[in-house]
Image 1 (cartoon, rainbow, N blue to C red):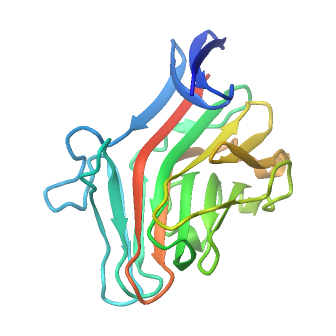
Image 2 (image 1 turned 90 degrees about the vertical axis):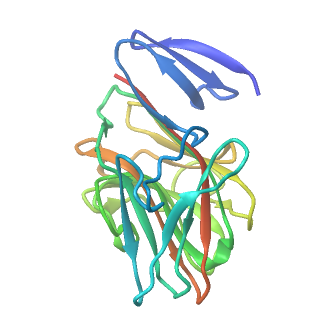
Length: 245
């Protein structure tokens, strides 16, 4: 992996390998959020309330899920579901800070792993504030992986009109592996196209104007649901969102 830089909209963007794989950016009109969980734990005293985040337990019965520190080299947090199917955890930031306006490119990336890839429902990306994303969001750009499969697809959605998985250029999907980290990234070019990557492989593009959510501010969101009568986990190593305006 090598580091490169380029000027964009009066800012300096650092990228690696691909020009749309952003590592950092500095400048007068950069908006960004990083978290690699390597410092003091962001979790509250009860290990369930990260500062600045909203955590919602989604329960199929009276059970509950948790969000805890991973105590892993390099830092990470772990989302753990209860042991009843469709029990889980929903986490979002408290602030919708990113708007994908025309002319304002934006990068999203996260590195994560799940304990049982074909026994979870996973949603991760950027969307409007919602405490039950798997039931459907109106606006967002995100990845999902449904119970009974281990494939990840990328979706862009505006006003409840989602793009169709595999409709654009790319392999169509990526495949999660139990207990193995994967990097999920998307890049909005500011000109009407979103590119989705799974472990640096382009899996899809979305470029239909009716699918790109340019009229709503977005926040980070992750939801994990158990796909069977057994607890499941999702470990998040890092999150990175960078935008130039």
